[in-house]
Amino acid sequence: MPSSKSPLAAPEIEALISLLGKVPGLGPRSARRAALQLLKKKDALMLPLAAALQDAAHKIKACANCGMLDANDPCTLCTAPARDDALICVVADVGDVWALERAAAYSGRYHVLGGVLAALDGVRPEDLRIAKLIERASQPGVREIILALSATVDGQTTAHYLTERLSTLGVAVTRLAHGVPVGGELELLDDGTLFTALASRRPS
Amino acid sequence: MPSSKSPLAAPEIEALISLLGKVPGLGPRSARRAALQLLKKKDALMLPLAAALQDAAHKIKACANCGMLDANDPCTLCTAPARDDALICVVADVGDVWALERAAAYSGRYHVLGGVLAALDGVRPEDLRIAKLIERASQPGVREIILALSATVDGQTTAHYLTERLSTLGVAVTRLAHGVPVGGELELLDDGTLFTALASRRPS
Image (cartoon, rainbow over all chains, first blue to last red; front, top):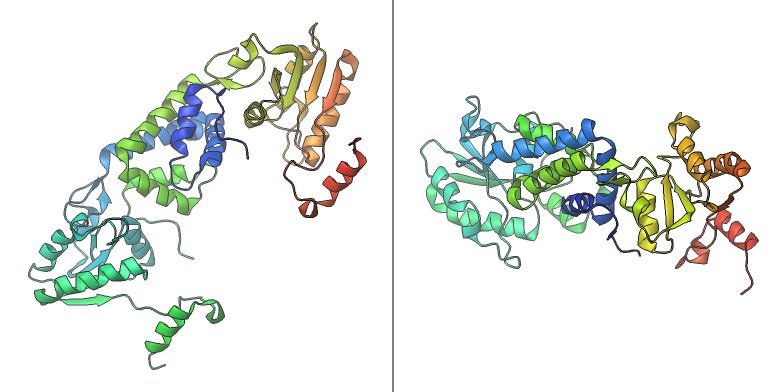
């Protein structure tokens, strides 16, 4: 396999390729192709992208309340008057909020942890926005904390830990249901999902 | 499948995601993930990337002689004193020059066509840098034009067209050899490659 270095490209192009290669989803090879395409579309894509990166970098910050990324702090979701203050949905990341909002199945508030507990990666409770969650969950009017964490070992470890921490506050703590994904073929599902779906069966 | 739109993300983030999604190699979903990661690494990646895009967009231009992208015009490859002026290697794109330079098997000059002839996509001879190639090939001292074009229908059509156009100039016109790729498993090769490799067999 040839090396991804090309010492004869202009330093400006090499610098661009090296940074593009660090963008998740682009490796060294696709970064090279992306750089070329960008240079071919300077006015249509390259300069607008540079401006959008700068604009977002300067304006977007984490909401001090829920951890969501937004141009406002507190964020649009925390200040939306139509949302239910009694519910707080706890997620690992900003992308999870986007996914839930796309599903349009929830209209309470959110709390972004900023990750999940991961002993092997050295992510401890104090690395996540857990203290702020306890503070929010302790406020009067909060009725239920919904733990919307991934069905992975780390996600469920985090859910277990949070359930313990929140248990003394007098709020209900719930988790997302596990089961057969909508549109999922039964014969393609893993054993764990099938087992859980069967154990959690409901009257039809 | 959920829509890739998330109307509740900040407009600055939506604008960024939309532009990132147009970068080759990133689709709408990976653009969303990339935007999030960039926002998490503002100083380490996001702002440097914005600066690199702007820097390259302003400094890099196509060499008027060979079509290569470089900060200098004529470019570094056209002005390098150690390269052989008697050889001109014709490629479709800048990325092909990089690939040949990585292989370090060639030390003549290059000529970047800016694509290949493609009747279906409406790419005609006048859309490529063919006039400049004829001009360069007509200069005294030029001995051989090497057509290093892809072994695709369009690539070989272009090679055929260029061979005709160059035939009256008194320079040798050659093409890259076809055959078994180095490291290629024989049983995994397509029939066309095997046929060509067999027809072009050499004394061992």
